[in-house]
Image 1 (spheres, rainbow, N blue to C red):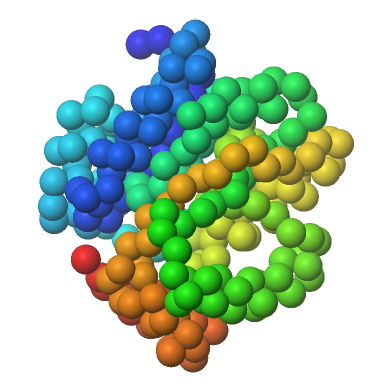
Image 2 (image 1 turned 90 degrees about the vertical axis):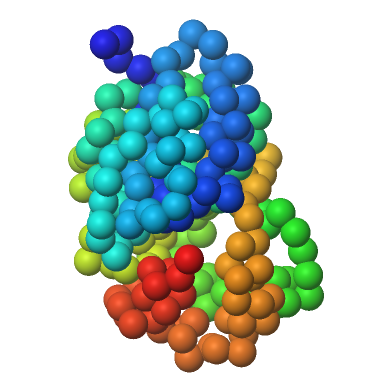
Length: 244
């Protein structure tokens, strides 16, 4: 089998309502890199709906992971990757039309170790607005202590560099994305490479707000702060792993 240029990993837990749109966005982005092979890997996590079926209809490879740890689910998908470039994107997020083109340009320039994207919710409300501010206020100090602000939401890098930094930290049940971004950035600095951010927006669903309510995280600040530790399994299960 010919080796693809891109391997795109999508962690998915009961995502039948969203994954089709995610895969359509990838198809659209792939049109701007027509000379690149695209491998799509859906890491199905304890799915009881049609997520895997829909993924296969789009030609995606499906791997199974039954853990209650998103870092482990992402890593399971990455282990199946054959492409030189690795991209991870959540099943309820939709990459920009030129996202893969930008990733290739940045990685082939030799200036970037990898990076992330700027996320934007697909809908807005006062509750979402103030929740976003609240989260930023708590995360910014954490990011500054770790060396500066970093984008996330959709990570991209060379597969070799993903392996070199050890992938996502499976001791974390939340904030694994922030931790990965920091380690990837620091790894790149050793060879004079930058951590980059794609132009444009990564659109992500507001499903958590739809499910719990737009003010839920503000009304349950004790739980929210526990999630910010990255280690609180009870809080992570309550908000991430024991839903849908």
